[in-house]
Amino acid sequence: MPQPPDTILDQAPTSGQLPVRHPAGLRLPISVVILTYNEESNIRDCIASCDWCDDVHVLDSGSKDQTVAIALAQGATVHQNKFKSFGDQRNWAIDNIPCKHPWHFHLDADERFSPALLDEMLDLIGPDGRKSACAAFQCPSKMIFMGRWLKWSGGYPTYQVRLFKHGQCRFVDFGHGQREDTTGQVGVLATPYIHYNFSKGLLEWFYKHNDYSTREANEALLIRRGGRPTLGQLVSGEAVAKRRAWKNMSYFLKGRAIWRFLYNYILRLGLLDGWSGLRYCAMLGSYEYWTELKIKEQADAWGPTTAALVEKMLAEPATTSSPRPATNTGDARP
Image (cartoon, rainbow, N blue to C red; front, side):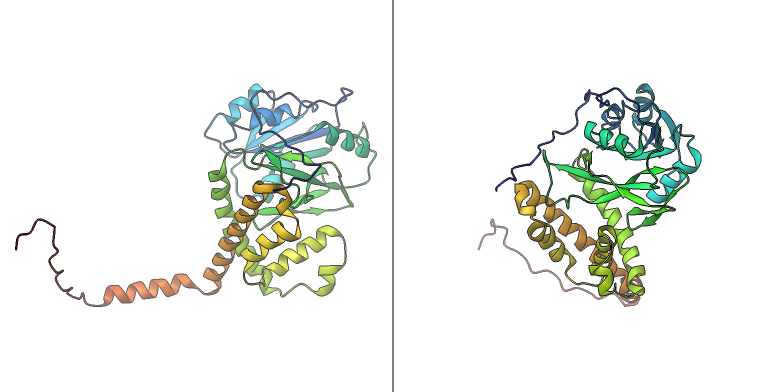
């Protein structure tokens, strides 16, 4: 399949990755908080990409591997809090981690900073952190899959609030992730961070998304009770609000798996990402099928119906099966 001329083939993270420092050696007035759980394969390179920062914190959810030991050896300050949800974990970090700087950047262990992103953040907030009047910034990311950047099928650019000013941003759980709740203007960064979403292999992705589809099904049922988005919400307003309105509308459609595949592969030109794009779009379709199936399971109350059927079958008297006919084993004699 053809590849877009500006495709960037980012290599998978490897141990010993070079640190990411600001070209001028400046320390940005930003504290970094990294969320972890069993991330021994990722945390070393993640912290290495924070070499420009003088205040790196790891918020761990009870890892059973060497995540904490590696983080401490890398010079990070480690905190522990049992994971309940992404929104709860980020809010716990805001409330309980004594960060040095008023600006915070929340990073996951499979994500990396780039020098270009450091330049843009420094330009926006200034060397003392007082230049911007924004409360937070939406940040895009580059998703890496099978050795390449999924520029088209990955929906680039999609945004999440990751850079924000302490005291002006909270997080609210939504589906399998979270949404921001800010008390001021939200800006937009143009430069992405790098996301190695499959650094632990496909099994980890399927395991997580099985759980995510359950959470999203629960959220979908709540949204459906509130009614469909209006036409105005779908076609007007800023980009993030429209994207969320269309996401909410999708919960009212049938055949979500097919629509999601066609959207990412055809409409979003995922076919330009080659075989990696085709495989990823098929995986997204599978995820949407799981979500739709779990929505139907709850809406149709399969659980009680199944339990009643089992109870009825157990109460019925056992039937005597007829004896099986003799079979010719091949060595019988006439």
